[in-house]
Length: 95
Image (cartoon, rainbow, N blue to C red; front, side):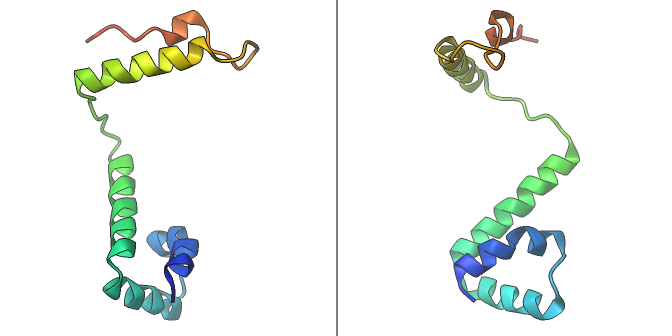
């Protein structure tokens, strides 16, 4: 099995929807491939965090930079139904 093969089956593997024989092949590949191990671990951690449903507070400096970047992008977005309104581009008040 090659990395591309694993990546093609990644969602099914992480969800536990892979046949046992194929699962054994994937795990054999993972045992010797650190980059694929990292990808699978990151996917599993992401799913765990998502399922927990806990909001993750952004550091204030990052949040401000993110809002500024989004605001800048939205200012230059094409007009039309898909463009956000001015109110939606303003950062929410600090809580």
